Image 1: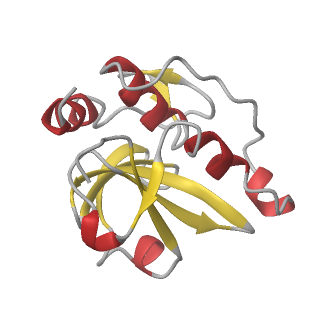
Image 2: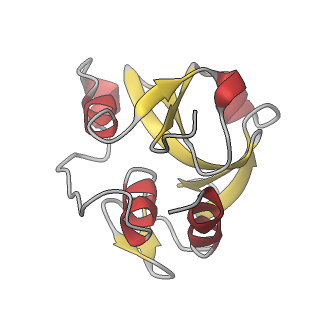
Image 3: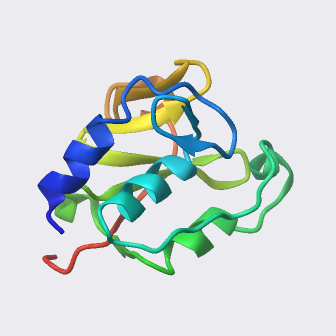
Length: 142
């Protein structure tokens, strides 16, 4: 699987409405299910369906999302990030908001306020640049 295929699949989700725990292109998806659906569609991971509440990051310190991610990906420094990699920001008490990197700083993520899957800028958008962020890759080319 190539990085270009991940980005192409991700861009196909643009405009999908936000819906908690959904993962149906054009119908609904959230920021956790978006990368799961994309990476599954291109064959990088098996189907995963974690159970989580819409506000778990506000009430728990457990890094639940990072636990799911590190099953399939490894953390990398910002300088090594390439298209198709994953970014995850700390919202609330733990890392809980993710995006697919299109071409850093451009990312694609599912947001409630934006109405669904939108492009964002990790360096310019206040909701992203003001928070701690980690980067992960599922590729071996780094």
